Length: 122
Length: 162
Image (tube, rainbow over all chains, first blue to last red; front, top):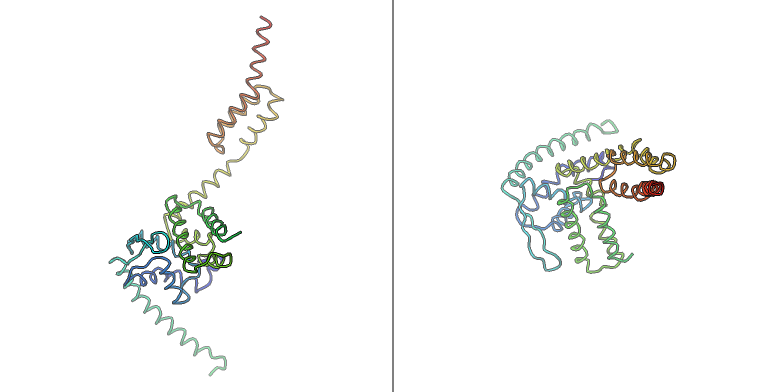
């Protein structure tokens, strides 16, 4: 999500899928933003700058794909917890199907490309 | 800078970078990032300079967060466009009118007493570059420094002749 590396295909991919990855994190349990970031970071490759999750969460709220609840915290100020809505679940299910087809198509091409691109011509 | 100063500096940079955002969203974003930093520091269990430096690396540069907001939030994007183009329009209005007004109010006051400052004031009020407050301040200064003394002198001269 850095302007300077917009040509990086991973950056573009990350931008495209991150919204639905966040929905997947809050699909089964409420989480607060810091926790969502932690899960995404542990998955690898999904988050570069943690602060950029907040504009994304704002959009998910506005689009009614998540609901939020403020809860007291044992340490520090109250936290906003996120949970997927029915609308968000539908969006996530649709994306899961699209993603599977997309991934298979790219995998098939990359696999074929690797065979066709054998530098020894075999 | 100690740890707390580093955090204040970071949040100050975020506040500066987020100036074109809608006011409500700007406040909300600052609160979210502050909460993020507080949570990370609480988890780290220390607030020494090195720990704070590492924690502040995690949210990324404030400008990057605001750029992401502009990219994915249509409302924020509209606000940013409007605010930035507003500034551009204001800056572009800094032209001959303002320069002429300043010349008439300064040099013109000596070359063309009364008339110069008077025309300068008309141009000040005609300008779209300056705010009403600035125009009022300019008017008061001109009245006090240039016009009232001259009017006073003319009145005094008239009285002595009478």
